[in-house]
Image 1 (cartoon, one colour):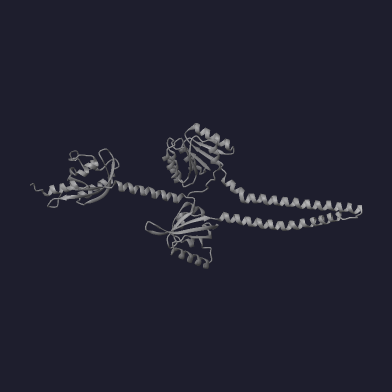
Image 2 (cartoon, rainbow, N blue to C red):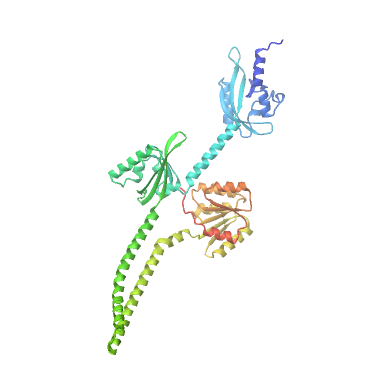
Length: 473
């Protein structure tokens, strides 16, 4: 019966482990690798022996600084632990957790090194996916049209999105770390501030959703009426307060204008009723007189003359009423509706597409649908980006192709996010790939994904969809 030596025992154990084991000589040439190493990398032990460690562990994406640090530490007799990418025989990248230590002789001198690796590719992919999700959620928070912020339990701002900063006319860095009372309720009397703080304290001790309509003042002292909705949340391990704001300022102004017009209509009705009542009473009396019997003819003539005069007075009052009502109607349209229509009407359209035929057709269809439109053509995304950067004028809507030379539609959207401005973008392409549609919907500024060529029905739909007017940042 053969008795295993110590080295044979270690070799046998290393051959059974799922971890990758590599033994290298003092000059970092491979002396031995276990089966797990061969299975993962695709190399045989024979093809590895005698070759330098860096030939297997590091590939085209190697970090020279990391490699230098590993070699320097090991040469000094210091063990290292790193997460690195190494490559299989067919060039596939693999993430491994590397632990490497010197092998010492009896006198303490280094005569080689042992490396133990653990395949962590799945873990790394999971981390990268989580990081992508985190970035997407951060972008959704940043670019959503709903004003939102996060406060700590003490009431200090931790994070605010672009819509919040736009509504309150501030920059995020101006409010982070400040208490919300100091920023938006400094105009309130001391007693009201205390009452509001007490409400907030009671809310923090509950799991309920807090809703309250209140008046606030922006950083530029603009008076706003808002509904604040708050909820306690846990983000990671931190206790936070999630806040979103519904701007009701326009609704308040609208209601005040309605109330004012109702008041004026009541006053108008009261005054005109008195003006109408007098000639009507006289006319009714004269009618009764004419109906009576045994009246001389001369009195009847006088009665009809009086009736004609009173009827003229009544007609004049009716004309006054019509003119006054018309003025009120025009004023109501101007104050309540015309501005809203003007804000939402599309004036300026950009077409960013390298296909000149499709661009010509789309331009003509837009002009046929609305001759007053100003349509600008860009045969490359780069030209459109330069235009945005130079003069800062942004279109009402932008039709964007995907596949273009130089800068693609996706790259254009990424650059647009860097400019921190919101544009109503419609991706339009001859592609029907569901992945393109899914990818387009990940961008908050993309309203829809359309297929080429556009028809007149779709053009009219584009021109009828309400716009989102908002600066980002």
